[in-house]
Amino acid sequence: MKRNVSFLLALLMLLFVLAACGESGTDAGGTTARPDGTAQPAETDPEDTVDETGDIYAKLPRAEYGGADFPLLQYEESTAATATVCVEDWTGEAVNDAIYQRTINVSDRLGVNITFEKTTSTAQLNDIMIPSIAAGDDHYQAFWQHSTNVAAKYLVQGYLLTMNDISAFDFSAPWWNRNAMDSIRLNDRIYMAFGDINCYLFDFQSIIICSKPYVEDRGVTDLYDLVREGKWTIDAFLAMVEEASEDLNGNGRYGEAADQIGFAGYKTATELAFTHAADAELFSRGEDGVVRYDGVSEKYFDVISRYDEVLGDKGCAEHNEDYMGRFRDGLTVFASCSVGQLSTMRETEFDYLVLPFPKYDEEQESYVSFISNQIQPTVIPVTVDDTDRAGVVLENLCAESYRLVRECYFEKLVNYKYVRDRESIDVLRMLYASDARFEIGHIYGWGSDWGGIENMIADALTGKADTFVSSMEKREQSIVHAIAATMDAISG
Image 1 (cartoon, rainbow, N blue to C red):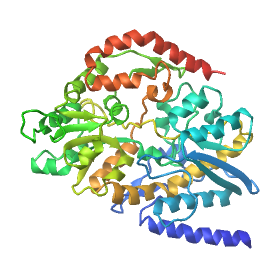
Image 2 (cartoon, rainbow, N blue to C red):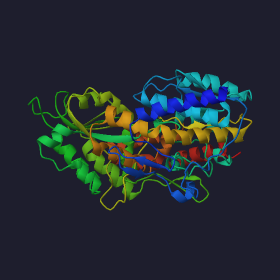
Image 3 (cartoon, helix red, strand yellow):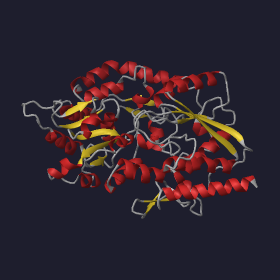
């Protein structure tokens, strides 16, 4: 009787959540709806995840755990992000309630008591998890922590399970982002997973925003057309940045507080996207999965030099100050930010465009999305005893998030709170389906010899390109040794 009542309540709340998310959503056949209601195929290879009936959820692992507890832990992200793994109750807000309903559905389906705890900081989470793991405590079944913290405090200490050794996980399924995982994979092992279980993966992808009044007032070519036609390139972007700078106070000097500049951003965060978007890398991965430092290629140097010539000019660009405030005040034409930071634009009186970071040239096949290191991966502590159960529950949570939460995120947060035009939605959907990447030195190098790479890249993009090659050559041996030390630490 209790199970029937619970099922009916859950069904009623599910109908409420689906209604709150509008007519769009993901059906059992794996299709999603565009904002205009037309069908859009799910972002997956059907042969990998669909059974003969076309049901992408048919192969989800099932079990009955008799009401066993399944505690999860996450720290509370304090930046401009809106989605989370952990919610405590119904609030009437669509994404929150979709996440809550997701947890109810999985709990009922598997007979498991999923509970969430949050900390107020990364340090507080470390104070809980590190002693717990060191003591061999099988309490928390998974946790979410800042990616650099995960790498420095847990991975190299041997505190995390290899997730691709757990058979319940299907990382080819559309609810996981395998590109993101592979971009920071150090060998053939996956220690950090990214997927729809945590919408932060969306919020921390990097974009460029552009003042729509500026574009319209000057009759600039439709930038969305440039994006669609594959012509949104480094040259096209930088030409507009240079042209946008204006001496508004008329004193003959450019780049002062009262002047209009072409670009603003944060150097060691979203601006790292410029090299990735041009498909230029410092590292590669051999057949054995080991990361290798390749040095500065001609293409890489060409990319940073071209950006440096414009973004290193204080009359054209500004970095690390109140870059979002400058944009909101109408004094910057372009700004780089994360998707989550668009939540700070809600009261902005003028409209803005949402664009990908530029391609290297028109020959480059596609745009590349960059994810900043603030994202929290899903990780499993090595102390978890029932690894099969951990895999089954987390796989189901991620799949149910794909089914219930993803479209709510787009419809309510992106469509109505973040952006104001259909083209922006199309750009974001394109980026979420793209070859999403991290800066690997940004993730694993925190506090180590190869951690300084992120600062060197950022400096080279904004004024120091001429010394970049020599500086990297001087540090090459220490970088190689740092990578080897990291590989050794996880080889056991």
